[in-house]
Image (cartoon, rainbow, N blue to C red; front, side, top):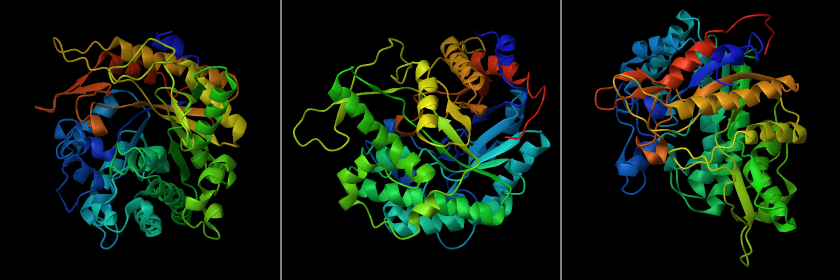
Length: 457
């Protein structure tokens, strides 16, 4: 049902409707006011890594257009904005001196949100590791977790009094597997041993970050954003079903297990236990501190079959063909029921706190025609996934909010600027923002909130 008024009536009055972005994807100004390079600055400038050798030097020029973009967010009627903070702006070399001008920018951002009555949901790490830390091993080095803890403490000490919620990490699956095993994201490693080290030290950094948040601001709602995969077996056959179970442990369990159970999955440890870095006393207790909320980023299902190749490394799967025939422009299968299936399974397997859909959206690359962008497929995608979210609330799951990805078209990582996820179109030559049909629809929906009886998250 795409009628925003009818859809709005399916949600509780205090449900949070927001939009989301990430620092590297929109800010630009990569050399301004003391910021130093991140691993994504280096990666983007290497031939063959990012489409067209696109980079984040200008992006959406958000750093220089902050007030204009805050007004844009307000014009969409949303009650919350999820953004990330760039570590290279705050502690430019990862360790060492704090850069006051970097903190000043986020002061202005948060104060601007408060002045407009918009909740501030901050993410401390959305992949832009200070490049200097890469020289010491980056996420494959234990000391990076402690550098992250100091960074988190620095940010929360400065901004925590005005934040409504904070996430330690965005999608550690990407900064671990996609970055260190599959080589698609910075730093572009293709090495299982590097990935296993990055896995544990990222999980440890999350726990140390939670401790830093609690020490500075005990009342601040602390969480973690995970792009959990809705994993579907390629067939009903025993081998494919077993492959799907292994894939679940590998893609989801290695994050959910440590954080929500204090342990890595048994199947994973039996495959890689001897290759993991040393798990020191207290590590798992640090990682598994209770959270106030968790965020789910969902776009598309993962379909897997058993890999029959002799000696195939765990999880020993190969991609299975999609079931739905609808694709986004980025090639991803659109399969709405997977969102509900995923939330139900994760809640069955783990004792989870309240959940926000922290990213959900679609890539369609329509341009501006006669001053407008008719992106009906994106509108349909968001409406259908919000319908599933409303179903989950009716079933009793604690779904507290939804953040559309993204506020505006931006630097889409390895895809550069050729893929567009925004509710707002960005002309990268002129930086002109044009609200798309989906954005106008979303504004009408968000405008119905807050209403009714309020409850605490």
